[in-house]
Every structure is written in C-alpha cells, then in structure tokens.
Length: 160
Image 1: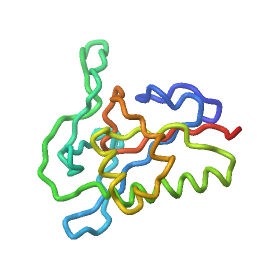
Image 2: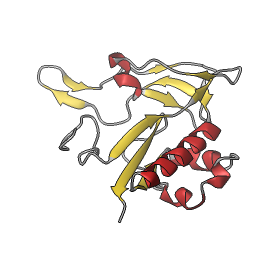
Image 3: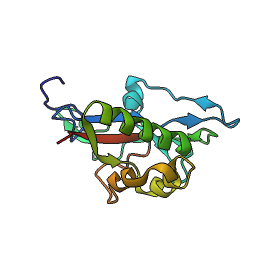
Image 4: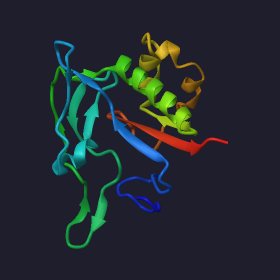
C-alpha cells in the first residue's frame, strides 16, 4: 500500500519497501513456463516445490486461521502432484542481478533476500549466481516463518 500497512497474509510488507517475485520456471523441455495464480491457490503462494526445486503441488505452511463458525481454516487446499515443472535457478540469479542494477539507478539498495535456504547453493552455483558477489551476502540464511520456495522476497532500503 502507498502509505504502508498490513497486507494479509504477509507478516512484512508494511512499509512499502518489500516485494515478492515468483521464481522463474522451466518445463520438461527447459522452456519458460508458469503455474496458475488463482484465488484458490492464494494467487500462487500455496504452490510448493521440493528441495530440488521441482513443483510438488499445493499446501499452506503457516498455522490455520481460526474463523467464527468454521474453526481452523487454511487459505488453500493441500495437494500433491508429480510434475516436470521446476525452478530456473540461473534465471533467478539473473533476475537478482537486474534488480540490483535497477535499484542502484534509483538510489535504493537491497537490504535482504529471502529464499528457501536449500535453494541458496543452487542459485549461487549457476553462472549468473557466481556473479552475485556481495549481493549473495544479502540472502537470509536462517529459516523464516514461511519457506519461500515459490517466490523471492526482497527487502529494499533507501540508499544512504
């Protein structure tokens, strides 16, 4: 929101300096592809990927919310799915480099990048990932409340 404030279901994003970007995906032929972003999968946030980056279905990791009359409710239905769709870690690294370049032009800096911890080595080992330099230090290396396996969360700060 322009003036900040709560943005459900996010615990952050309150100051207008955070952005989520869904990870680039490839199909079995290594062509760019995408997945559904609909209300019933919480606009893509319920999509889940295994530790290698392969699409594995949908689920919500946070505790269910308690609603009157309904009780504990999750915002998406859990499913498992065998799929050849997988994360393009090389393109994710290129995306981060492009964001860093644009941020410097606009006097903004990347303060932190949240991504599933098991993906950090996969991003960093790609040709573009080896060019991340100090940007790789911005990865949050501890687990956070949601795994961030389907998207990058980028915290920005106004440059000093």
